[in-house]
Image (cartoon, rainbow, N blue to C red; front, side):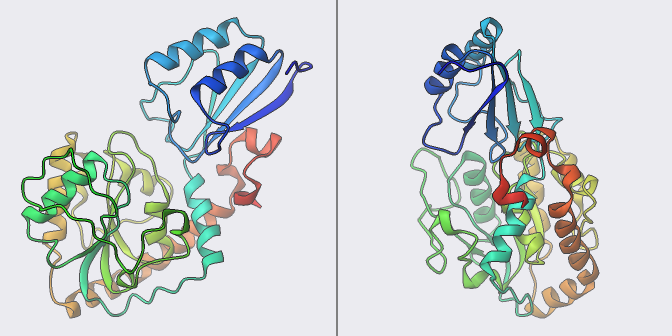
Length: 316
């Protein structure tokens, strides 16, 4: 495990090799290496105690002769702790590029011309903020008219308005095949309510990229400012339909309630939904084309990936 100066050693966070203990062993055992942690699929170090372990890694890097680069899919302005004595390269458009490539290969057709449901929301892991959103939707009476999946139940969340149950749409329960297997209800829904991975820090994942690719109107239940971040990437918001003032709301619970209000305001007859969709058709097409542009633009790719490789399956 002894390296000559500047030898490269890659470890992927989405691999069987990844664990806090293995990573610490690498830092202690290797000499004069450049250790790259390829974690663009996540916004922060996966599997770590964010306070305790970050300090441990920082101390290890301080006494080490190695240098360390972390690749993150998070937003550079996010308040996420990273180990000292290391470099972080952000790739906030990673999932945009990955989704384009995956969806093109899947060749799944979405028609968006026959809306039976005012909205759809797809949920795999029952994180707390997703539980809260589902409870808010139930309180507003929206679960009875919308399409939704709830692949796994959460026994520890105290639902006040929703009698929680596992709901699988069209056998859409294979997380590993979620690019190739979209439920039939997807095409029949007007708005996609995206329950993003985080409501604390901006993290744009495939959950947001898919409705852009499939030319759907969408709202994101995510971190404060996530819609503004999309505008910063050149996308256009559907302000003919939604009041995005909730995007600047500091309190997550209030932000979630305001998002539900936007859905409530757009529950109507299928004919109305189709008319609204046609009114924003130019923006839908623009956003799709912008997504394709970003996926091909090498300026969004971190220098360490362009110079030293990694994620060839995404950027090739």
